[in-house]
Image (cartoon, one colour):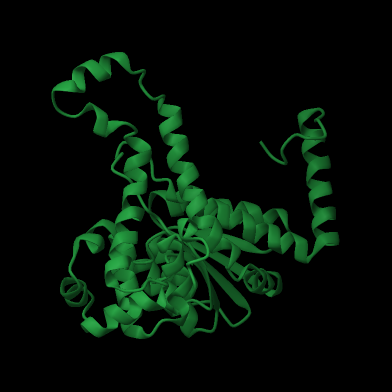
Length: 309
């Protein structure tokens, strides 16, 4: 890959995620290690990276070149830059207020509004995932959803549980038969009832939740198509027929909810829109009916009001 044309736009995290499907198994292990801990990978020596990933030093070197770096040194530099992005957004001007000057500068400077800090993290998460989603197989995944006799959406945890229901809401609007499940035992039960006419959509930012992976493996064994919105180098991604990559990179601002769910929601919206556009006439009529029904229920409604409340 040639990155010399525009090195400033070379996002190493997005590049690694894009390369994962074409990597050798050993290189994929290196990718998973790096995506799990950017800062730790940036600090580690080439020998430490190889040891932690369980691969050879030569595999780490090949990986660096495969993702567009001249060598491991450049790879580590880009990883360090990527790991610093979140902290730089949250600690603007921090270097200027170190030591004895801290109190004076803090007294003079206006505090950054919390809304700005939250917005900056959300914006960074969306921007990082935007390039990945441009390469994602949305058309193929939407075709599978459009042809499915039944769609099951699996999600667990604080973010993916809520977004599993969000996915169900999006697909119901388009006339698709869909149900969402967040309980691990129910997921296993449902997975055992599927056939090759069913699609399972699995949501997991990390792709490493054992119960979710087990349920998806069962569904695959019974013939279901698996669409995973998840980390591209994860065990869940390795199981999937179609992977929509989601890359999370959390900052040290631990008090705010994770921004990764915005990236997941963006991916959900793109997938639902792809499906709607694949069946434009049917989608338009279903949405018209829904708008008519809701306006009648609410006693009227503006042309630009959202379809729902």
